[in-house]
Figure 1 (spheres, rainbow, N blue to C red):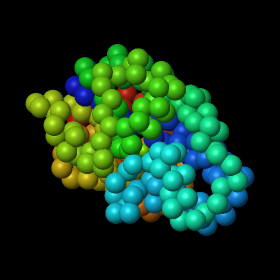
Figure 2 (cartoon, rainbow, N blue to C red):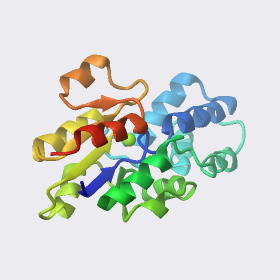
Figure 3 (cartoon, protein in one colour):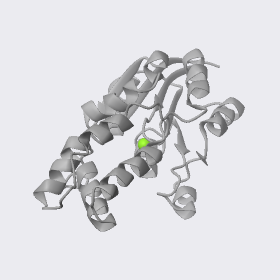
Amino acid sequence: MTIDQIYLDFDNTLYDTVSLSQDITAIFLQAGLTKEQFDETMTEATKGKSGTFYNYSFEHHVALCQEKGYVLSHDILPELSKLTEHDLSFEDTYTFLDWARKNSKMVYVLTAGNPDFQMKKIASTRIAEFVDDIIICHHKKPEEVALRKGDAKHIVFVNDKVSENIAVKEKFSEITVITKRHPFRETEEELTDSGIPYFQTLTEILSYIQKYGHK
Ligand SMILES: [Mg+2]
């Protein structure tokens, strides 16, 4: 069985962004921000004022704190920059990618966010060795798939964000969409109601694809 295209999300699909966020939180709190101030600025720095434009960077987050008059005890940018030097891929990320490379004609990473920040995280991993292209977009994943789909018939799309997965499935019912379960964002009910198969790990996702294939 050969798959034509596999689209893989980056954050919380191939890479443990929750763990990175915990480290970011610790640095801001140690520098004197309250948890409330941190949460407020993190949300705004990640999603922008509109709530839909993914554009996080450390510089942007620190600048936002300054704009709001939230005082940081020292320059935390050097500490923050160090965080993206570690490979935070999941333990089964490379096994999954190796399988994907061997079993799909094309393998794409499709990720939303600030291009520099995304590339910094990706560069700390070996993911680029396994994929054909890395696409950094701003929250329009179905459109990004549409641009590349052509007449490909067997397509697999793996991502942790259920709302995006539903959007892809609604636009392309023929695509095998699989949810890599985020550790706490969606409820069990939301996952079940989506009608999209969901799993905790890439290992389980790989077994599912191998067992049931793709349409
Ligand atoms: Mg994600």
